[in-house]
Image 1 (spheres, helix red, strand yellow):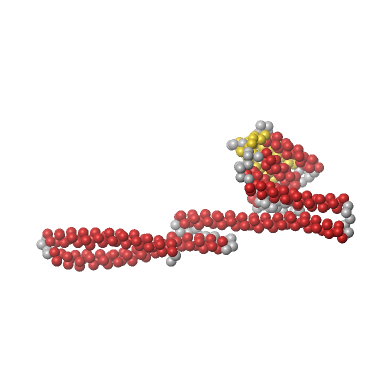
Image 2: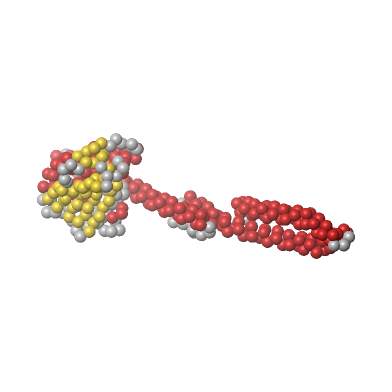
Length: 351
């Protein structure tokens, strides 16, 4: 028996022993005196009355007390085991999880409170397993994103050193492109790290139509070169509370994401609306749908819907993670939906 179970059993037995002691004092002392007085009043001697009491009541009471003590001890032990067995199983599962077994779960059995504890523990274990999966994917994807441009840079530099590749403008342009890719990745990681550190960013009232128009103006030439139509459905007068720099970054990332996944000749629509003390901005684009299984993960760091896509189209998988982090940093929320050839990514901020 575990220490907790033993303590519960001893406590239960102590309560039973106290009850037996009180009953014993009442019966054997006060009850015996009362019995003796009544028998004397009816003509029996005190010695005969005492003998009669001892033969009838005392022996029976002592036997009953012994049986009650044994029964209470057995019930105390069973009760202690019933209460502590689920706790022991939870402790065992916790030890196994600490040892690296992320898939084990505690059975939600026993008393209601212990079952609730087991369910809460299992939810924590599931989140821990999910965080471990995301951490492993983050490390693997970050290493991959760094490895590819670095490998290309090393290859070009070795080829230049050995005279295999001529030092032309095209060669230096390729080197610059790989270096710029590393710089963009470093800046994206800096944004993620900054969001992890900033807990109280100042929020100001912003005209959302003006913010959206400025963001679209910066990327409109890229949309036009690919023949993608861009339309704004943002009424005037919609106000949201956000950090100006964060909002600009969020809109830029969403527009770049739409540019990347909208086929030539497609359409991108930016809308905004207000209600219930929040303002909602969404960017919708035509094109290939996001599978339902991938939709809950699109805001994870380095997550790609199509793992076979190259970085020219698939990106590094950080843009939407930055959107989520910056929006939530300002007290907002994000979401995505994709059906009928249309993908919509939205965010809500306080109004």
